[in-house]
Picture 1 (cartoon, rainbow, N blue to C red):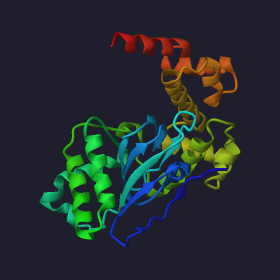
Picture 2: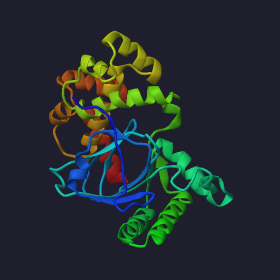
Picture 3: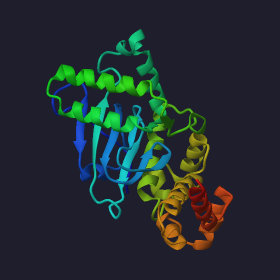
Length: 290
């Protein structure tokens, strides 16, 4: 049974923040979280990205900034692109002292870090610019210049308008740190298992509750039932498969975790107000007309 874990991060060069390059093995990490902020740039590979409650496709130059304790993972689609690599910068809020960000010079970056609580996906030309800057930061041997490069990267991101938030604030109930950490474990179980059988008993065990108590707790803290949340993940995955691949509707159904075609059609149509096959047709029509 997969569950979220707190990742303990260290810097390989003894500096106050970490810049690392990951190969294919780095994409095998399960849904996890840590107190550090994280800026991830995909330099090679394609697949699915999970950040908080958001599921999206990723490909080369994908660039995301995540706030502290925001659970995340990248799942490589090895059938499409077996090779993968990324550059990742990680730092704690107080790595330069808590008052550092409160200076007038750091106002833009302070706002950037606040936005990152929801996860920020950057778009457009800035992705390649930041990728090159992150490579330079990774290769820099002078620790002082290494630090200045990080601040330049954060400053550049802080003034960019080419971004979107991955988790809309109005869709996430305000939770205590304790409840958020517990629910992260549940979401991790869903992320790692929604393609297959999902067990209410196993989900409740991730946070040490009985199934009945778990159902009440989960609905109270997330405003959705456990089954509704699982269905959301499966429908979102199906939507992406329908528009990103030419797989049959049956294959999309079963790969998304549904065991029955009629149930898949019913749930998809109820959520999207359009059938799976018409959803794909509509997307193709809009793409051609666009």
